[in-house]
Length: 484
Image (cartoon, rainbow, N blue to C red; front, side, top):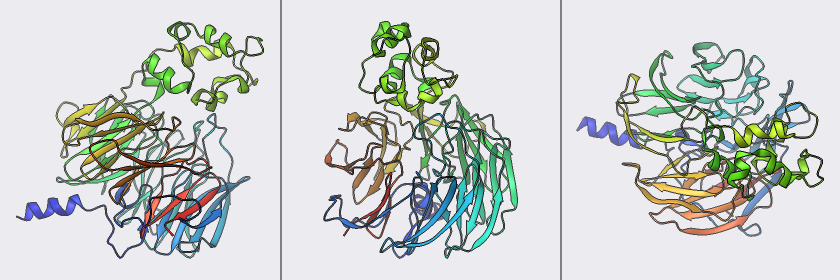
């Protein structure tokens, strides 16, 4: 009976108690992107449902909520901002600044204020890739800060810190001190660290898996998923052969961990073309010879492509990456690698992992795997006995988490753009936000049931936070509270 009670507790560990008004980290309690309190409204009526709306400087971090305060990061000119707002009114309570150098990024959506703050009730931890860690108390007084070596991250910094017991856990990749770090939360002293793990870049956030066997830290990186002991940082297990560029975070219950990731480098050439060029249909001949594609796009017939000759697409977003010599145009030689390059060495994959493994678990602890409808930036959502994924282009997939059988497979949402925000589960529904600014509300069901789609009018890169039935949403220029 004691074993059964333990499993019951573990299955419900991520959720805050009804008395707590907290969304304490990226993806909320336990990193599960699930809200316990039912929403006051899922209409997202821009006239009737808005409790308040305040203007924000640029940034992509999600709201971190502690009782009556909301914490966010932002950037203004060369300043990195740490902000606190009153949860009930939206009033700005305090603002602190740090100055740091900038990273020359090559992606249009890269943001220096992408990492989400985290809190344990006593402190709030902020992380900026170009500065390091800053820890304040909820009233904004400095507790400690820690400068960290400057990264070389041309695609930006996406990982967020988390607080576990008395430690701040942080992954750092693409920098001189790459690795996984545990710092004492009271003073910032390093508790343990795990070197690079062979990763090139990882934009996902570490996940604490409290499973039926033990409590462990799961970190995803280049072609590899790794389990780490929380007390000492020792590697417990590894699963290789996954995607090369990881932007997602795992999710789990007590019995199974789910990790899904997709990257363009590991996609087949025709699949890569579909997601790279938006609505533009690329022929087989153009995939084999990028000069044909360039000729079609080359409006002024100068044998080069300017930014305004690219369609609205992922290819346009990474124009600076394609323009390798920085002369403001893309030549046939510069275009060829993204069009004609072969598939990479990684595998775009969803894996369901059993607990208790040691060493290489690829042949012993993978319950099942799935290869369709995989997310690029948005993480999978485990909610009400179903596993959801939304891929670039607006394709929603729902699987049975027990065996990977689809309830529905790649159902198309009206907005075909990017999806950076992770779906959130609340009140028997999903909230799915597109980067273009469309909010989709769907029923959590075995069938695809779209309830409504609302155009916000501003792009959305951050995952919503939900507390006391109110939905807090950060868009390109605003912080919204829905649930009047």
